[in-house]
Length: 309
Image (cartoon, rainbow, N blue to C red; front, side, top):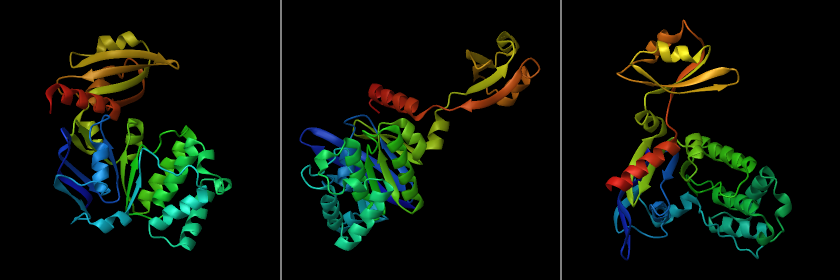
């Protein structure tokens, strides 16, 4: 079931077309990546979903129904540009933001204590926001974003400014939120995080949707018939024994054995490759090489820029 849908969404600002008939289908209980270069239109789409602004045409559906004003209570939004009040105390501000989401003061304090203990930030309760590091402030904003248990969570560059340990902590919490039933829209430039967390993606470039679908399907569709062969023995034998159905791209030597990257031609199979070399070298591993999301992002965006599609 599609929990969130953007259908033919158009948005213009003066002479700038921010979104040009953009479509997106986010399955329920998934982590969905919204990707694109700077200025592609991602933030505009997120602002429309949050009803900060409205589309010129097209529509947003939440759980199959047109977005309503009261749906904002079912959404948690962590924007890229953080917005805490610098002079307010952390606890006071967290309670204030929680109450804006409909929680009573007592419920807010109870839930905040749970999260502050989990993130080990209890000592900062009575500190002013301006006394906190950027990473600590982001923890606070993450907490108030998820506190009211929204069904839809929107994270825009949630790991910005985090060290690897805290970034990993946040990733684990995002995965747990999905396991508990949340649907998560996740915007980032970090393609490693996309591969690690996302089930599906939509890629926007110059206001248009240029790629969408499940991560695994996309990576399979952009593969280049390349395999990685790890072996011990004479690397020259690899080149000599392979037929014209195989092209050795590169051979590296690491940790006492070799790694060959071999491109398969003419519909050749991995079994054929294995049969060609198994009598001459000792095989440690053989597997297909899929392109990274970073490689696909660059390839698709550059093609879009060249063709205008």
